[in-house]
Image (cartoon, rainbow, N blue to C red; front, side, top):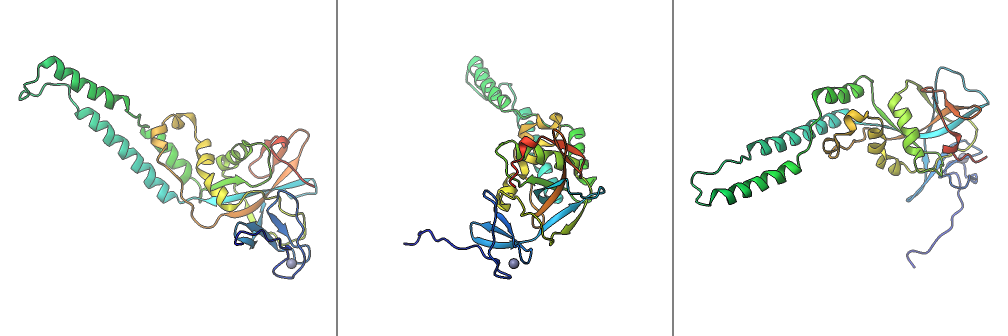
Length: 266
Ligand SMILES: [Zn+2]
């Protein structure tokens, strides 16, 4: 049978030690050599895990939550914005060119002709799409270009709340906080990652659009054809949060989230 289920022991490809993990997580850390692995549909792969370092020092009360950090290609995005704009402008000029006047060569009686062209114009008008102004476009482009690189943050932790990815991803993406990153090689807790890299990439448009103000979001026809393109490989990064009374406070970007958005396994 080709599709027979095979059970394999999870062993570290580097040192051969058995990997033990937490339920729902797809990442493991070898307890002997501290390397990280991820289970993908193609099998077990080794993965680099990074830790984000902010200005405040990490302490024992901190909690590390994993995020996929995905850099986007701003040149391609700018092209898509321009493409979508010119498409909308072409559509608008088609409407302007459709006139109601009677063609003098036409023998049809004027009432039915007017009715016919009138209906045609109405149909085009009904599909009329609004175009964002230069101020909105300027905002969109300058938001991205004011940073050295532009990253989309997709939460990778376990959550029973379907909106958690959008809510928390939007906060970090909207802030584009500066931070340093170093490869984690120290013994510690396994990374609580529950989201595959491909699944994270599929969410980047949703999270990016969620960061935009309503003044731009109302131009659905303009935004619809736009989709972000990834630049470089997504990285799995641990972000430090501080457990507070009723919230988890992100030391990087300085914002709070509800602990209910995160399912922590110990
Ligand atoms: Zn190992």
